[in-house]
Length: 108
Image (cartoon, rainbow, N blue to C red; front, side):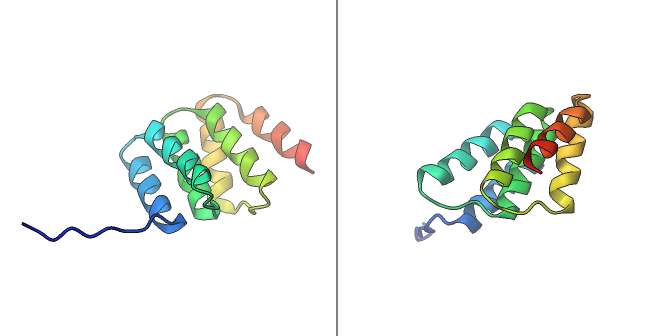
């Protein structure tokens, strides 16, 4: 039998797990992990937000993607081109590009 080892959860391990879920189409699990981070008082970074927004985008969940995007901005985590591309793609899939524009205008 292989020896068991434990990895202490961190923003890095959560980001890796969320990214894996995003690649596998598991947006529900990605959002669940994202919420678990907050419950563990772990601060999401840009990579975590991008992975979660991307997972929602791939799952066609544009409203969830926008909610997470808005949470990112309110948490003072600066979006980057990857963030905007995932958010725009999510809105385009949901034919809600105007929603992203309105969302950003409120923050300016």
